[in-house]
Length: 62
Image: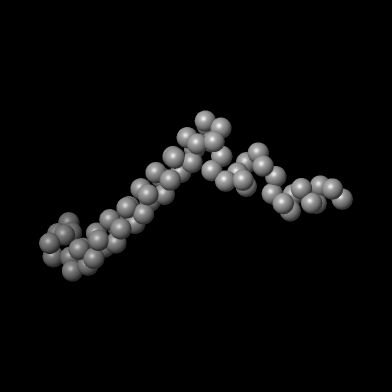
């Protein structure tokens, strides 16, 4: 069995994993907030679903 106290890279890997976890948590919170805005009909930007992109509207005129 591996003894983590004797593993020289343990602390560095744990620090990296904690940083990755924090980044993923932030992305999840951002995603959840966006999902709530969309469910309540409050688009976060003019290019959100339901609004055609400028390239879509110009190509549909052809």
